[in-house]
Length: 404
Image: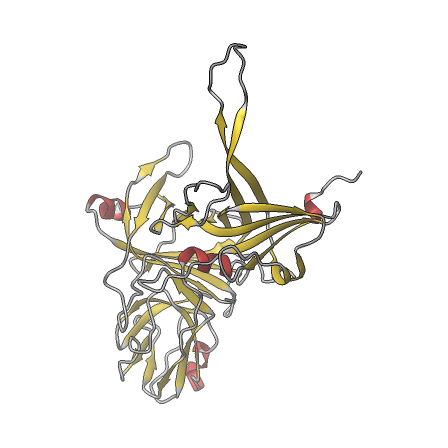
Protein backbone atom coordinates (compact mmCIF):
# COMPACT_ATOMS: atom_id res chain seq x y z
CA UNK A 1 0.00 0.00 0.00
CA UNK A 2 1.46 3.43 -0.96
CA UNK A 3 2.20 6.07 1.65
CA UNK A 4 1.04 9.65 1.31
CA UNK A 5 3.88 11.98 0.36
CA UNK A 6 3.87 15.68 1.08
CA UNK A 7 5.42 16.47 -2.30
CA UNK A 8 2.35 14.98 -4.00
CA UNK A 9 -0.28 16.59 -1.76
CA UNK A 10 -2.17 19.60 -3.05
CA UNK A 11 -3.73 22.24 -0.84
CA UNK A 12 -6.66 23.82 -2.66
CA UNK A 13 -9.09 26.50 -1.57
CA UNK A 14 -12.16 28.24 -2.90
CA UNK A 15 -14.51 30.99 -1.75
CA UNK A 16 -17.93 29.88 -0.58
CA UNK A 17 -21.07 31.76 -1.55
CA UNK A 18 -22.37 31.47 2.01
CA UNK A 19 -22.03 29.70 5.34
CA UNK A 20 -23.03 26.06 4.99
CA UNK A 21 -22.43 25.95 1.22
CA UNK A 22 -19.06 24.28 0.59
CA UNK A 23 -17.23 25.20 -2.61
CA UNK A 24 -16.82 22.07 -4.76
CA UNK A 25 -16.55 21.10 -8.42
CA UNK A 26 -15.05 23.53 -10.92
CA UNK A 27 -12.97 26.43 -9.68
CA UNK A 28 -10.73 26.85 -6.70
CA UNK A 29 -7.00 27.53 -6.58
CA UNK A 30 -4.03 25.32 -5.77
CA UNK A 31 -1.92 27.08 -3.15
CA UNK A 32 1.84 27.38 -3.04
CA UNK A 33 3.06 26.46 0.40
CA UNK A 34 5.92 25.57 2.64
CA UNK A 35 3.58 23.57 4.83
CA UNK A 36 -0.14 23.23 5.36
CA UNK A 37 -1.75 21.26 8.16
CA UNK A 38 -5.49 21.00 8.71
CA UNK A 39 -6.75 19.05 11.68
CA UNK A 40 -10.25 17.93 12.62
CA UNK A 41 -10.52 18.32 16.38
CA UNK A 42 -13.29 17.55 18.85
CA UNK A 43 -14.17 18.77 22.30
CA UNK A 44 -13.78 15.81 24.65
CA UNK A 45 -15.36 15.38 28.08
CA UNK A 46 -14.21 12.88 30.66
CA UNK A 47 -16.93 10.76 32.19
CA UNK A 48 -16.00 11.58 35.78
CA UNK A 49 -18.73 9.51 37.40
CA UNK A 50 -18.08 7.16 40.28
CA UNK A 51 -19.22 3.57 39.87
CA UNK A 52 -18.76 0.41 41.92
CA UNK A 53 -16.14 -1.14 39.60
CA UNK A 54 -13.87 1.86 40.35
CA UNK A 55 -12.86 2.31 36.68
CA UNK A 56 -13.26 5.10 34.16
CA UNK A 57 -16.24 4.86 31.85
CA UNK A 58 -14.37 6.79 29.15
CA UNK A 59 -14.95 10.08 27.38
CA UNK A 60 -17.79 11.69 25.46
CA UNK A 61 -17.43 13.49 22.13
CA UNK A 62 -18.39 17.15 21.86
CA UNK A 63 -18.27 19.94 19.27
CA UNK A 64 -16.41 19.37 15.98
CA UNK A 65 -13.86 21.99 14.91
CA UNK A 66 -11.21 22.58 12.25
CA UNK A 67 -7.80 24.08 12.93
CA UNK A 68 -5.49 24.91 10.04
CA UNK A 69 -2.06 26.46 9.57
CA UNK A 70 -0.83 27.53 6.13
CA UNK A 71 2.76 28.72 5.81
CA UNK A 72 4.25 30.09 2.60
CA UNK A 73 6.85 32.37 1.09
CA UNK A 74 5.64 35.87 0.33
CA UNK A 75 4.83 36.49 -3.33
CA UNK A 76 2.55 38.97 -5.08
CA UNK A 77 -0.97 37.83 -5.91
CA UNK A 78 -0.65 34.42 -4.25
CA UNK A 79 -2.51 35.05 -0.99
CA UNK A 80 -4.59 38.10 -1.86
CA UNK A 81 -7.96 36.44 -1.20
CA UNK A 82 -6.87 35.19 2.22
CA UNK A 83 -5.39 38.56 3.17
CA UNK A 84 -8.52 40.40 2.04
CA UNK A 85 -10.67 38.05 4.13
CA UNK A 86 -8.46 38.69 7.16
CA UNK A 87 -8.80 42.46 6.71
CA UNK A 88 -12.52 42.14 5.88
CA UNK A 89 -12.32 44.13 2.66
CA UNK A 90 -11.70 43.04 -0.93
CA UNK A 91 -8.68 44.41 -2.75
CA UNK A 92 -9.61 47.41 -4.88
CA UNK A 93 -7.78 49.60 -7.38
CA UNK A 94 -7.13 53.31 -6.92
CA UNK A 95 -8.10 55.36 -9.96
CA UNK A 96 -5.12 56.73 -11.88
CA UNK A 97 -4.45 60.43 -11.35
CA UNK A 98 -4.22 62.41 -14.58
CA UNK A 99 -2.17 65.24 -13.15
CA UNK A 100 -2.12 67.38 -16.30
CA UNK A 101 0.75 69.64 -17.28
CA UNK A 102 1.59 71.43 -14.03
CA UNK A 103 3.70 68.84 -12.18
CA UNK A 104 7.32 69.68 -11.45
CA UNK A 105 9.87 66.98 -10.60
CA UNK A 106 12.99 67.62 -8.51
CA UNK A 107 15.78 65.48 -7.12
CA UNK A 108 15.23 66.56 -3.50
CA UNK A 109 12.07 66.34 -1.43
CA UNK A 110 9.32 66.96 -2.29
CA UNK A 111 10.17 65.11 -5.48
CA UNK A 112 6.90 65.98 -7.20
CA UNK A 113 4.94 69.23 -6.89
CA UNK A 114 1.47 69.66 -8.37
CA UNK A 115 0.58 73.31 -8.88
CA UNK A 116 -3.10 72.31 -9.06
CA UNK A 117 -2.85 70.72 -5.60
CA UNK A 118 -4.73 67.61 -6.64
CA UNK A 119 -2.82 64.77 -4.96
CA UNK A 120 -5.20 64.29 -2.04
CA UNK A 121 -8.45 64.72 -3.93
CA UNK A 122 -7.21 62.07 -6.37
CA UNK A 123 -7.28 59.56 -3.53
CA UNK A 124 -3.54 59.09 -3.14
CA UNK A 125 -2.24 58.11 0.30
CA UNK A 126 1.01 57.82 2.21
CA UNK A 127 2.25 54.27 1.73
CA UNK A 128 0.99 54.01 -1.85
CA UNK A 129 3.42 52.77 -4.50
CA UNK A 130 2.72 54.15 -7.96
CA UNK A 131 4.34 54.78 -11.32
CA UNK A 132 4.55 58.00 -13.27
CA UNK A 133 4.06 58.16 -17.02
CA UNK A 134 4.18 61.00 -19.53
CA UNK A 135 7.41 62.74 -18.54
CA UNK A 136 9.54 63.73 -21.54
CA UNK A 137 13.08 64.93 -22.24
CA UNK A 138 15.10 65.10 -19.03
CA UNK A 139 12.20 63.77 -16.97
CA UNK A 140 11.77 60.43 -18.75
CA UNK A 141 13.74 58.76 -15.97
CA UNK A 142 10.72 59.20 -13.69
CA UNK A 143 8.49 57.04 -15.88
CA UNK A 144 7.69 53.38 -15.19
CA UNK A 145 9.44 53.18 -11.81
CA UNK A 146 7.95 52.17 -8.46
CA UNK A 147 7.67 55.29 -6.30
CA UNK A 148 6.71 54.95 -2.61
CA UNK A 149 4.91 57.94 -1.12
CA UNK A 150 6.29 58.66 2.38
CA UNK A 151 4.75 62.12 2.90
CA UNK A 152 1.90 63.81 1.07
CA UNK A 153 0.04 67.12 0.96
CA UNK A 154 -2.37 68.45 -1.63
CA UNK A 155 0.49 69.80 -3.71
CA UNK A 156 3.64 67.99 -2.54
CA UNK A 157 4.55 64.32 -2.97
CA UNK A 158 7.63 63.10 -1.09
CA UNK A 159 9.03 59.60 -1.27
CA UNK A 160 11.57 57.25 -2.71
CA UNK A 161 11.97 55.25 -5.88
CA UNK A 162 12.29 51.63 -4.78
CA UNK A 163 15.12 50.99 -7.23
CA UNK A 164 17.26 53.31 -5.09
CA UNK A 165 17.93 55.89 -7.81
CA UNK A 166 16.91 59.55 -7.48
CA UNK A 167 14.15 61.37 -9.28
CA UNK A 168 14.92 63.17 -12.54
CA UNK A 169 14.44 66.94 -12.42
CA UNK A 170 11.88 68.30 -14.87
CA UNK A 171 10.00 71.57 -15.17
CA UNK A 172 6.23 71.60 -15.58
CA UNK A 173 4.70 71.23 -19.02
CA UNK A 174 4.41 67.46 -19.58
CA UNK A 175 1.00 65.82 -19.39
CA UNK A 176 1.68 63.21 -16.71
CA UNK A 177 -0.25 60.50 -14.88
CA UNK A 178 0.40 58.77 -11.57
CA UNK A 179 -1.00 55.24 -11.29
CA UNK A 180 -1.10 53.29 -8.03
CA UNK A 181 0.16 49.80 -8.89
CA UNK A 182 -2.00 46.74 -8.29
CA UNK A 183 -4.71 46.95 -5.64
CA UNK A 184 -5.10 47.74 -1.94
CA UNK A 185 -7.02 46.25 0.95
CA UNK A 186 -7.51 47.71 4.41
CA UNK A 187 -9.65 47.23 7.48
CA UNK A 188 -12.69 49.37 6.64
CA UNK A 189 -14.84 51.52 8.90
CA UNK A 190 -18.07 49.99 7.55
CA UNK A 191 -19.18 47.33 5.07
CA UNK A 192 -16.92 44.59 6.41
CA UNK A 193 -16.93 41.43 4.34
CA UNK A 194 -17.69 38.06 5.94
CA UNK A 195 -15.96 35.45 3.79
CA UNK A 196 -16.00 31.67 4.22
CA UNK A 197 -13.63 29.32 2.41
CA UNK A 198 -13.51 25.63 1.62
CA UNK A 199 -10.06 24.04 1.87
CA UNK A 200 -9.13 20.65 0.49
CA UNK A 201 -6.08 18.50 1.15
CA UNK A 202 -5.89 16.19 -1.87
CA UNK A 203 -3.61 13.14 -1.54
CA UNK A 204 -3.29 12.00 -5.15
CA UNK A 205 -1.05 9.04 -4.30
CA UNK A 206 -3.84 7.59 -2.15
CA UNK A 207 -6.82 9.06 -4.03
CA UNK A 208 -8.02 10.48 -0.72
CA UNK A 209 -9.57 13.86 0.00
CA UNK A 210 -10.01 15.82 3.21
CA UNK A 211 -12.39 18.72 2.69
CA UNK A 212 -12.67 21.39 5.37
CA UNK A 213 -15.83 23.46 5.17
CA UNK A 214 -16.91 26.87 6.47
CA UNK A 215 -13.37 28.09 7.15
CA UNK A 216 -12.24 31.60 7.98
CA UNK A 217 -8.91 33.37 8.32
CA UNK A 218 -8.31 33.98 12.01
CA UNK A 219 -4.81 35.50 11.92
CA UNK A 220 -2.11 36.55 9.44
CA UNK A 221 1.59 36.69 10.31
CA UNK A 222 4.32 38.29 8.21
CA UNK A 223 8.04 37.78 8.77
CA UNK A 224 10.93 39.65 7.15
CA UNK A 225 14.17 38.19 8.52
CA UNK A 226 17.55 39.89 8.38
CA UNK A 227 18.41 37.76 5.36
CA UNK A 228 16.46 35.17 3.41
CA UNK A 229 12.94 34.94 2.05
CA UNK A 230 10.04 36.94 3.38
CA UNK A 231 7.32 34.60 4.65
CA UNK A 232 3.66 34.66 5.54
CA UNK A 233 1.38 32.35 7.49
CA UNK A 234 -2.36 32.05 8.06
CA UNK A 235 -4.25 30.60 11.00
CA UNK A 236 -7.47 29.03 9.71
CA UNK A 237 -10.50 27.94 11.73
CA UNK A 238 -13.41 25.95 10.36
CA UNK A 239 -16.51 24.03 11.34
CA UNK A 240 -16.33 20.54 9.83
CA UNK A 241 -14.37 17.97 7.79
CA UNK A 242 -15.58 15.63 5.05
CA UNK A 243 -13.54 12.59 3.99
CA UNK A 244 -13.76 11.26 0.45
CA UNK A 245 -12.15 9.16 -2.26
CA UNK A 246 -12.61 11.76 -5.03
CA UNK A 247 -11.18 15.24 -5.41
CA UNK A 248 -13.75 17.88 -4.39
CA UNK A 249 -12.20 20.64 -6.53
CA UNK A 250 -12.31 18.98 -9.92
CA UNK A 251 -10.55 21.67 -12.00
CA UNK A 252 -8.68 24.05 -9.71
CA UNK A 253 -6.47 26.78 -11.12
CA UNK A 254 -2.74 26.07 -10.95
CA UNK A 255 -0.47 27.75 -8.43
CA UNK A 256 0.61 31.34 -9.05
CA UNK A 257 4.05 31.84 -10.59
CA UNK A 258 5.04 35.24 -9.19
CA UNK A 259 8.55 35.49 -7.75
CA UNK A 260 9.31 35.10 -4.05
CA UNK A 261 10.19 38.29 -2.18
CA UNK A 262 13.55 38.64 -0.48
CA UNK A 263 13.93 40.38 2.85
CA UNK A 264 17.21 41.88 1.61
CA UNK A 265 15.24 43.97 -0.87
CA UNK A 266 12.80 45.24 1.75
CA UNK A 267 12.66 48.68 3.34
CA UNK A 268 11.17 50.05 6.55
CA UNK A 269 10.09 53.65 7.07
CA UNK A 270 9.44 55.19 10.49
CA UNK A 271 7.77 58.59 10.48
CA UNK A 272 8.39 58.77 6.73
CA UNK A 273 12.17 58.27 7.01
CA UNK A 274 13.86 55.09 5.86
CA UNK A 275 15.57 53.28 8.73
CA UNK A 276 18.61 51.51 7.32
CA UNK A 277 19.73 49.64 10.42
CA UNK A 278 16.64 47.38 10.73
CA UNK A 279 17.58 43.69 10.87
CA UNK A 280 14.12 42.11 10.82
CA UNK A 281 10.42 42.76 11.24
CA UNK A 282 7.23 40.86 12.04
CA UNK A 283 3.54 41.78 11.82
CA UNK A 284 0.54 39.86 13.19
CA UNK A 285 -3.05 40.65 12.20
CA UNK A 286 -5.42 38.89 14.59
CA UNK A 287 -9.15 38.81 13.91
CA UNK A 288 -10.12 36.77 16.95
CA UNK A 289 -12.21 34.32 14.91
CA UNK A 290 -13.57 31.21 16.64
CA UNK A 291 -16.56 28.88 16.36
CA UNK A 292 -19.76 29.93 18.09
CA UNK A 293 -20.61 27.94 21.21
CA UNK A 294 -22.37 24.61 20.71
CA UNK A 295 -26.14 24.36 20.47
CA UNK A 296 -28.25 21.44 21.65
CA UNK A 297 -28.85 18.75 19.06
CA UNK A 298 -25.79 19.46 16.87
CA UNK A 299 -22.12 18.57 17.07
CA UNK A 300 -21.20 21.36 14.63
CA UNK A 301 -21.13 25.04 15.56
CA UNK A 302 -23.78 27.13 13.76
CA UNK A 303 -21.40 29.97 12.81
CA UNK A 304 -18.21 31.85 13.65
CA UNK A 305 -17.66 34.62 16.16
CA UNK A 306 -15.38 37.48 15.12
CA UNK A 307 -13.45 39.78 17.40
CA UNK A 308 -12.02 43.23 16.74
CA UNK A 309 -8.97 43.25 14.47
CA UNK A 310 -5.75 43.74 16.38
CA UNK A 311 -2.41 44.45 14.73
CA UNK A 312 0.90 44.08 16.51
CA UNK A 313 4.49 43.17 15.72
CA UNK A 314 8.09 44.05 16.32
CA UNK A 315 11.27 45.03 14.55
CA UNK A 316 14.91 44.71 15.53
CA UNK A 317 17.50 47.38 14.86
CA UNK A 318 21.21 47.87 15.36
CA UNK A 319 21.70 50.21 18.31
CA UNK A 320 23.30 53.34 16.87
CA UNK A 321 21.30 56.18 18.42
CA UNK A 322 18.58 56.98 20.94
CA UNK A 323 16.03 58.03 18.32
CA UNK A 324 13.71 55.04 18.69
CA UNK A 325 14.23 54.89 22.46
CA UNK A 326 13.19 58.53 22.73
CA UNK A 327 9.99 57.83 20.79
CA UNK A 328 9.24 54.95 23.16
CA UNK A 329 9.97 56.96 26.31
CA UNK A 330 7.84 59.87 25.11
CA UNK A 331 4.94 57.53 24.21
CA UNK A 332 4.90 59.11 20.75
CA UNK A 333 2.53 57.56 18.18
CA UNK A 334 4.45 57.01 14.95
CA UNK A 335 3.86 55.69 11.45
CA UNK A 336 5.42 52.51 10.06
CA UNK A 337 5.65 51.38 6.44
CA UNK A 338 7.15 48.01 5.53
CA UNK A 339 7.93 47.28 1.88
CA UNK A 340 8.87 43.88 0.47
CA UNK A 341 10.07 43.59 -3.13
CA UNK A 342 11.30 40.82 -5.40
CA UNK A 343 14.38 42.71 -6.56
CA UNK A 344 15.66 46.29 -6.94
CA UNK A 345 14.47 46.69 -10.52
CA UNK A 346 12.34 49.68 -11.49
CA UNK A 347 9.06 47.72 -11.85
CA UNK A 348 9.65 44.88 -9.40
CA UNK A 349 6.65 43.15 -7.87
CA UNK A 350 6.11 44.30 -4.29
CA UNK A 351 3.84 44.37 -1.28
CA UNK A 352 3.50 47.17 1.24
CA UNK A 353 2.16 47.11 4.79
CA UNK A 354 1.27 50.59 6.04
CA UNK A 355 0.29 51.48 9.60
CA UNK A 356 -0.40 55.16 10.13
CA UNK A 357 -0.39 55.02 13.91
CA UNK A 358 1.56 52.62 16.10
CA UNK A 359 3.00 52.82 19.59
CA UNK A 360 6.31 51.27 20.55
CA UNK A 361 5.92 49.12 23.66
CA UNK A 362 9.55 48.28 24.47
CA UNK A 363 13.21 48.68 23.51
CA UNK A 364 14.94 45.63 25.03
CA UNK A 365 18.63 45.14 24.07
CA UNK A 366 20.59 41.95 23.56
CA UNK A 367 24.26 41.37 24.32
CA UNK A 368 27.29 39.41 23.18
CA UNK A 369 30.48 39.68 21.18
CA UNK A 370 28.72 41.43 18.32
CA UNK A 371 26.83 44.60 17.46
CA UNK A 372 24.07 45.31 19.96
CA UNK A 373 20.49 44.85 18.76
CA UNK A 374 17.39 46.32 20.33
CA UNK A 375 13.91 44.88 19.86
CA UNK A 376 11.01 47.30 19.44
CA UNK A 377 7.60 45.63 19.84
CA UNK A 378 4.64 47.71 18.72
CA UNK A 379 0.87 47.82 18.73
CA UNK A 380 -1.09 49.49 15.95
CA UNK A 381 -4.34 51.38 16.33
CA UNK A 382 -6.92 53.06 14.14
CA UNK A 383 -5.45 56.13 12.47
CA UNK A 384 -8.33 58.53 13.07
CA UNK A 385 -6.42 61.31 11.28
CA UNK A 386 -6.92 59.56 7.93
CA UNK A 387 -9.83 59.55 5.52
CA UNK A 388 -11.10 60.88 2.22
CA UNK A 389 -8.98 63.70 0.76
CA UNK A 390 -6.47 63.25 3.60
CA UNK A 391 -2.92 61.94 3.47
CA UNK A 392 -3.59 58.63 5.25
CA UNK A 393 -6.09 55.82 5.02
CA UNK A 394 -8.40 55.81 8.03
CA UNK A 395 -7.62 52.30 9.16
CA UNK A 396 -5.34 50.24 11.36
CA UNK A 397 -3.42 48.69 8.44
CA UNK A 398 -3.35 48.88 4.64
CA UNK A 399 -1.88 46.21 2.36
CA UNK A 400 -0.95 46.91 -1.27
CA UNK A 401 -0.18 44.03 -3.65
CA UNK A 402 1.25 44.77 -7.10
CA UNK A 403 -0.43 41.68 -8.57
CA UNK A 404 -3.75 41.75 -6.71
